[in-house]
Image (cartoon, rainbow over all chains, first blue to last red):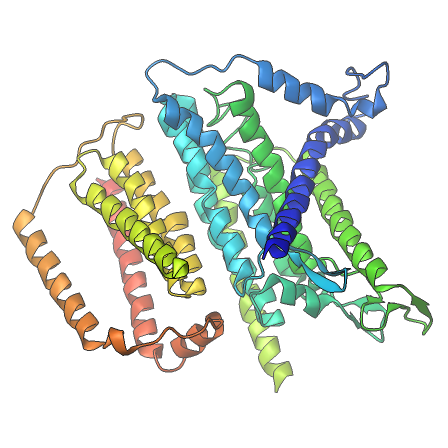
Length: 364
Length: 169
């Protein structure tokens, strides 16, 4: 009993610190990567004992700055509702990660620990359902501060997230039909093998390329970042968090990065093989190379490699998302909503029909 | 023994939140507050589904009603009033027809519940529900499923017609 509880707490801490750590690193990476892309130097002022460490101390200085800034609450605004909005946003942003498998099993003292926080039969629906609640913090922030620009940001967010939320669900029906399950761990197991005589990993992206593109696009829209940052639009309306300062603003800011990491986690799990390492098979006790060679790896090594592979993949997708964010300009609200309803929705429906038809033909 | 008591406390707590917030939705005079109270009613219902081991229904309930319908309701309240009004009052119209409809619905639900002998049933162990629901919707309950989709299309067309008339005036 106590042992199970300790294991669960340990898993939660591992996942949460990974999520938070990656989100914090992304705040630095966003500046450094954009600087590289724009031929600038980027964040390099903060230092610890004279060490600049490529600007990494900026993560700490940012946190100190946000925590010590004046916490401004506009007059005539219910204080507790004002304080509630950023924490609702932050909590809801973190929750979908609980369904993501971050490894298979870890052998520990004669026992096998399942490397997933909640093994749900409907894990994918859980992630989507929680993600659909992200809008409430945003609506609350705009509504409670009664600032016209903030309300405009909230309205844009609501219009955008409802439209893209529908597409987000439908774009994943194709992969679900292919895997035949809503359980995220089973999805990874389906992908944890090879095709084409052992050369190609059986990852979802090779079977569902259209779903992958649509899901990634919609994922960016769900994180409310460029080119879909209309609810925030720094140069025009500033956004739903206009009347927030200090750490409350910091919570909104951090939630955006956490959402980015969660979208990356979902992408990796559904399309990029999750924790699976190409050619590494736990049943065969090591790497089985396409040319027939075999490299033995102990069970603990397999588990650790898989856990590392998950974070490497998530990091790679985060890098891709940042690359897209610094490459494209912002859409107008009508363009963004039209893209969602008139192009991405039919495309994802088409993908669903196509996948179903192929499965029907191949299955018989 | 402790388990049974914990379960009872959990159940009545959930029931209290669900019914209490539903009362706020119905009798509250502030529309925005009613809409936010509806959030807790819907959450309570989702929790009830979890309590009944219907995980798929619970999550789809959250996805559709909390992530979709309620956001649209809030959206509607905002767009039909002065946007930054915190204090939007609800009026009371058609009290008698509403009461009659409510009583009829309550009677029908009561009859349905009475027709099941709940006390004789033992709780079944948890099984995955999603695939079973899908199979039933596309076989036994195909006709009601299709009728529901036709009703949704009719509502959609109706909404577009009403919206168009507004702009061409």
